[in-house]
Image (cartoon, rainbow, N blue to C red; front, side, top):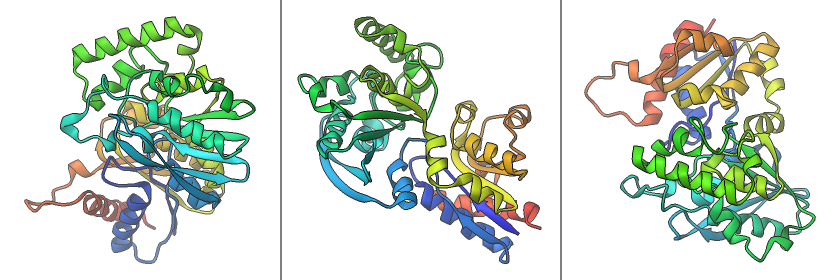
Length: 339
């Protein structure tokens, strides 16, 4: 049996490539004769540059930009032909801020603006920004501040926002109410952020604020739209680059993994990308996660055949690392699905 192992990043702890290795390790314990094809994926969030670099090759450069709280951080530029790929999370990612210090009111997207300018300075004709997994909810205000007086440096450059979500800037599923809680914002902070986003949209272009993807990355999607960027689904962009459809057709089963499988995962994320590719090929899809918060009806609506949670495992009293938990889960699932 041939199994495609195509995970997203699994929480903050496991990059997509590490998750793929953990699944493969566990699966091989129970089904040692299965052939495993490892294909780490991304939806535009953390891991975007890594995944594309593996799939497309290219040359990597490193620049220093402002992190979410102003400290200098390194961020990569992946050049493939006349296109530069960058990742907003490398500049202002949530993983760059220690949990006690997370505050999306203070965190800025300024470093993403610096990253875009650095990409344009290479002479690239096209700059693709992976958007997701950020610490900020400033609506792209910081990004625009970094470009103040320097917009002409982007002349002739095609900008693309590869977003991990189709959420608008404001509203129940927007940058503040939909995502800021996971960045450390309580209810009062989310209300304050929503008000600030509405004011920012009124100052700039409220029409763009309702566009799909405007709320991505805490509103960095909106900032890029203000610059004239084309918005694309990050999962679909990565799927094409990695030949996901072809790899699924060559397999008997698709297995994907992520940290928390919730309602947001059903909005164009990696799980949906893998499942749709598997459906086109007539292959079943299995999802592994630390926690599963969607029911059977939701699974059926997107074509997922089964979802399994590490939280449901009985691992005893000994502590287990995230990769160990994922490996144990994969081993148990393989007993049911390997033929």
